[in-house]
Picture (spheres, rainbow, N blue to C red):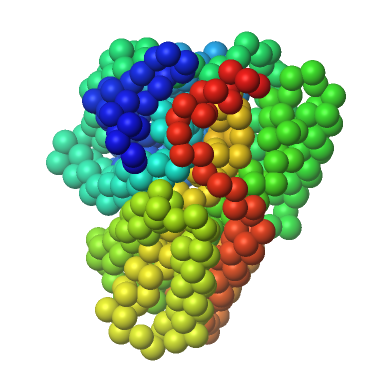
Length: 500
């Protein structure tokens, strides 16, 4: 960052923000992001305790599923609303709804009440991550923005490492409700910081109508698709009527949403954003790259327990290289963006490394010692990490400042859908390979494989082949993404907003 930019950044014509003010704002949005990220990981280890205490193990998966459904579905709504009414009010709404949902979760007397409360939590938490990225885009010019994406990668790593540990500790030594009560002080601090700090945030929003019909169609289409992906192979066989019906409903609803985008005067997602080649290719690259990574984080613990014979706690420790490497890759890539012209070169090389590493796991992973496996997972993680800041900043750099929220929210929305889709593919490979194609659970995985005479290491080799293909698709979309010069001044961004 040059000396003049280092001292002040413009809020708009004639206004300036000091670096101290910027740091306070970024701290606040990171805390908001931590709320959403931590809530997705802290609950996992507490689920058995919650199920036993509330006397309902059958519906326990819905505690996770309903949060995923609501959080994913509302992400584009937050982006559009923030472009229309401002980031500050949108962030405050998200935090308040999240806190209300957290308190309702902590007080839930039954499993049904907890599931409903988790849905409310998702409605609040769904926009916090995309909003945090958008707010940094309002503050920092694209050329310098990659450095700040590193902080967000650190938030996700912290949530991934601390979440399961804290969740298990609270459930065992205190009470499972503490995992929700902890959101109250964190949320209130984030609320105070957002209320005061975001007053000075640059304003690029413009008055728009919110396309309520389009929003409803998008939510219903997303929920139908995610339900089908969540239930397929586990609750119901993939070819069953409930799963096929959900997919059919999703196809129809997506078609209606596409028609609505063309006919509405102010569609929820403007066609110009989706037709932007940088946004389209960058979103697809992140969708397949991050989706594959999410799939690996879900199924590698299953691999460690069922193939490598590790305990649940040791499997969590074995996952650390995969989680921590993304921060290293994002740090290197983010800092390089401020210094090099061709910022795509590093993530292209990183995705090549991730592809080769997953191919190695597919070919000889079963014969490799555990230490070598950990090194390969670290390479996968570092390689994927280089993509994260580049895809986000390139997308934001390609749109007008008053469309930042919509573009960032849309990219995060499709990245979440990609994760759900690839997790479902990995699940189908594992369950079908182990002889559970009619529906089953991971608890019976080893027993079913033994009964069918299946070698689970061969099954997971196919998972790693699928992961290599996922990284290869991300690689191709990144190659196709136009490498536009990054704006090096926040002043130019403000001037662009005024001129449009």
